[in-house]
Length: 171
Image (cartoon, rainbow, N blue to C red):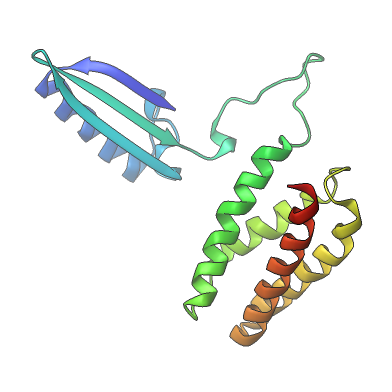
């Protein structure tokens, strides 16, 4: 969601109060779902006596209005590129935390594994690697469930290996 408008100092202060309230209690209108934001960038610039407020707030896809296809039905799958972007984000958190010898958040692992299971249903993007990739995902799930940091390191290394093999041919 994007906000771009000219305001005076009083309106700017009111916007920040509404934003703070939305972060604590959930928002509506232009601040709907802001409490579940993924990324937020806010800029304010003085322009000829007015303040130009710009806010870009990335919220979960579930908060956005669903896109419908020509038949009026909601598509069953996200675009492949959107799915890969989501996977990149969750995998980055997983890798970084494991290499810091910290257990990644369950939400990141669950999101990555669910997206991986969905990814292998897209034909033509490395089908011949899907089976070995999913075995590596199973290893990650098992290691996470066991809470075994050594197994988590091996599982992440196996996933990186599978990703590298596939992306060498398909990226």
